[in-house]
Image (tube, rainbow, N blue to C red; front, side, top):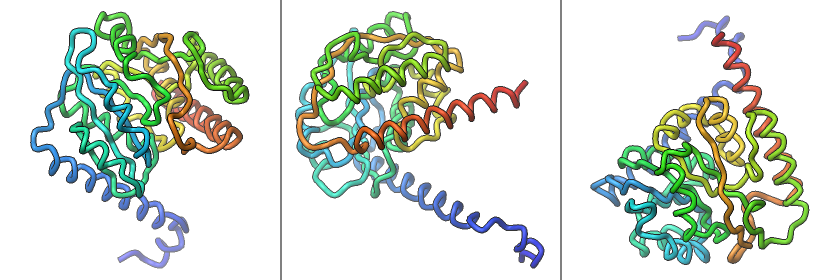
Length: 281
């Protein structure tokens, strides 16, 4: 039993943090049990198209239909992690016949992708490509995203709407893409033009290295670039088409909310990585 003195020294919110951590673990364990029930054989193809989907019932089906069966001479499997929600996103994925893992509650895109990365690695993936469920990324460009990794040119490929074609008209979001690319380039010493694009491909070894170092539950695209860049992995970019959402609205909030939160992720990740590097010296 803790003494009265120990109670005085206990931080007021420590039990809340432990409670939240326990609930998160429970949710992730439930999702893994759900996945195991759906797929008794967890083996996946060498290339895994990973999609984190939150209430994208209206858009997901067309995205899944467009994912190619093979790219760069390698078979492709699709893995959808349904990040909670109350619509029929899980049903759409199931009916498409793709590997499906369903979180019982919404944890955020970053948390859903981390679970997807782990499942893909456990399934034997050699290359993992992430793309959005809303139709803004073109699955037929998966060859463009995967080829540099298969050919040994890079470990991490980021799609660029600025080098390719941006079919959207939001000039504020475009300005943010340029601003945050410049900021990330200054931090990690890269020359990226579109660091916030979620259409990406990774060598499996890079994902295994990054996975225990990722923390962000949302707006996680900056975190991945910073951690990968500071770990010395080879990053490149490829031009792609950026489409307007097929339907519905973004789950990431308006321009101001997105911009502030994205900047928060950049600064907190940079501080964490920098302090960690200093501590190891």
